[in-house]
Image (cartoon, rainbow, N blue to C red; front, top):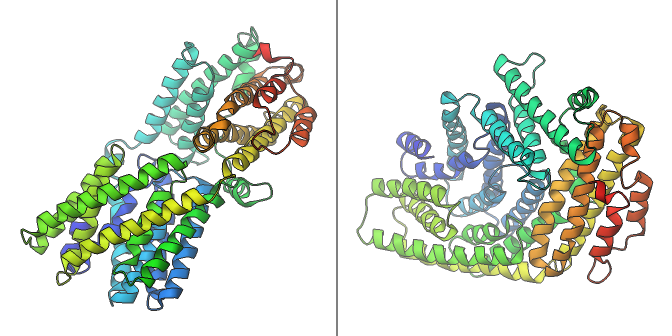
Length: 535
């Protein structure tokens, strides 16, 4: 980020050069991924940044039209991000670009230049972030395999009760390998890594067979069956989009998008009506609190951290400005702010916000030296208070029934995915392409069910009792996976606790999850079935 900002400022000057800070934020996307995966992400995000910024610039001269455009961009970007669930830092900067562009289009004639600087900054920063691959060209793949090896060692030694961690690590390593190279004739290095991962996959299959079908894993037929079951990988983009927006879809992406759009709309409208100096700061503060889609308690804490960090950051900038720094020193503050923000963001959000505030205000000061710093600092505080306040009001007044609705849909999707895998086991097609797709979807839904339960339990403590249901579903899922690896899947299917028909009947007769409508302990017992002890 620093190299990109300095290089661009040296070419275009201090008036718009510091705004390269925004495009350089692409450095946070897909860090540690293989080259092919990074280039794909950079192509998408690198296009969205300037397009979102440009839309804001075009709509900026008409404030209410700009507000509508900002709301639409926030709604779309947050919904798609949470639907596809990439490994990036979140949808915040994708939508914030539009709000920043609206401000530039309304108050300056530099919007076009800033869009151009953003394009160059995105490209240059993306190129510079590839430096780690110069030293270790296959580093991301090797790290993923090492994580799978460690998780598999824990599972094999009995330190991990379930195979969740080991399965997830092996499948994650396979996703990384697939994202790195998908050629008919892979390179020798890639083929060697695939061979190593195949050994780990064999160990995983054998361990699951030992747990659910003792004795079958040690036979030659058992080894052959394990080798025949390829790793499933990640669900397709179409599956993820249908999961978020199709019939009987999960409401999580839509809820996150609606909350962000509503808070951003209220914040930008209030800022316009109050004639605040920089409405985009209010939009930033509203969406930075809500964009992750976390539970109410942690999101509220995040909002308070945002307020505290902003106040301390403003105080720091005021202290520096009392020394009347040069524009060159202000550029140094931009770079130090970016460095501190990235260093501290995973560790302490308040301290990270201090550096982010220094970075943002210093960039604006360096670009517009005639602006009143005192006015700018006042605006930063006012609009942060407005944005965080809007976010918290929206958070606590919307989605009261969301935890139960989300868990209900996720449970039904997970059990339906389990039924499809069991169906393939009964039909003897678990190793064919349709069976592989079913296993891929079940693995994804099991992980999603586990993560959603942890999140919804924080908002609705009564859902904590569903932990027994999650454990029962996870146990059934691993039993089904083990049956896929069994050398005689038709015989293995007879030991599964449920048939596909019984699982679908359970879903058809289960009332909608709501307080008092479902006894999770009875449901967990029903899911355990007659063969629960065999697991």
